[in-house]
Amino acid sequence: MRVLGVEADPTGEQGPEPAAVSGKAKSEYRNYKEGRLLARVYNTYLLMHTHQTVDFVRQKNAQYGPCSLRKMSIMEALDLLDDLVDESDPDVDFPNSYHAYQTAEGIRRAHPDKDWFHLVGLLHDLGKVLALFGEPQWAVVGDTFPVGCKVQPSVVFWDSTFHDNPDARDPRYSTECGMYQPRCGLERVLMSWGHDEYMYQVMKFNKFSLPKEAFYMIRFHSFYPWHAHGDYLHLCNEEDLRLLPWVKELNKFDLYTKQEELPDVQHLRGYYQSLIDKYCPGQLCW
Image (tube, rainbow, N blue to C red; front, side):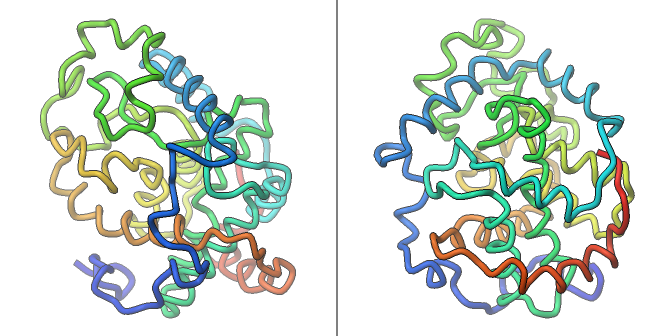
């Protein structure tokens, strides 16, 4: 299948190795065992894994699905992320707006002919504006996981953070599939609430003129237990497996372009504004 003239599986294309851009070994990323930010990261996940339940996720989907919070442009939302440092991230301690440009520029270097994919890099974490609208970070940032079924060992801190989550004691949610049917498809799975699902809802509500792959990448890019560790495949259908390579491709740049040397945002704004004008212009509903 082709999308906008692009092969649906992007992984065979050649591009610069993202880790080489940062000068940091891949093994140094996502270290949840040691590091100066570990206490902050662990506390964020402890709160997340205590409070993210089926009922909580349903409540948040109902609250934010109508996109009736406010109106603003993509650039206005991106500027808000100047004031957000992601407390779940063990790799960086600078505002999330810079990470958006780092990711987008990494994709742009590797895939110069896919301007819509460059925009995905810029947009992928934009849902984190929820943390500036009053939501606690544990309900916005970090890796996502399905609620309503057994937690898999690849979930960050899975063995020490779920003990006070009421769903962990509910027999309806204690099996591998829990409240789902095997191979039901991720479209039918309730993911822990956060910036992925929120930004997906914003894109859908405002009818962004991007391919399905773009919506899917943003919706599931934080689902590390699935796309990085191969868990929860029993819930996936053929469409999920078809789109998985795109999520993996985004992840390379989301993760391995993080570096302390920050991009010249003013120099880059013009190019990315042109993509916004092309695919998601004007004042949007959030």
